[in-house]
Image (cartoon, rainbow, N blue to C red; front, side):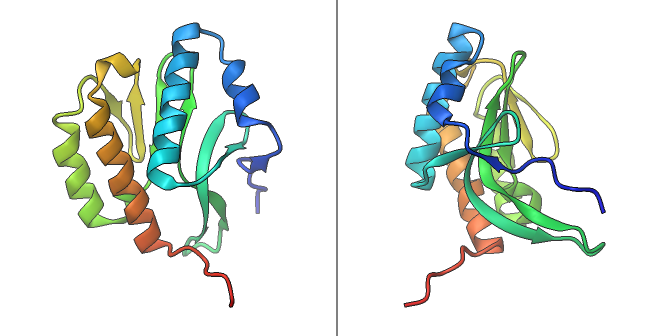
Length: 150
């Protein structure tokens, strides 16, 4: 079985964001980081080469493939910011709520579990915050966080 390439790294999130090429993308990344921290209450980690992820979960497919990934995250890419919102992919309630919210988000495109935004000025940040919350909550329902033993 192939080794998973997207793993947490020791790279500093602050240094990563400071190294984002374009000033506007860098400033957007700072806003996104703040928004994700607010919604999740989690400190981020860099996953792979360019994903800023919050929280972790363990998945296992019917095929036997399994691994760990961030519960929610984003990547400040050159063309567009990629937001990883897996909650709507694995939870029907979140999927329906996502569809409602996306109608009032503003200019964006999307993939199966990704939301693409060129610049934050194109979207309603309150709607974006609610999208993050819906997907974060869904991931916590579907993949309950491990509880510490007392």
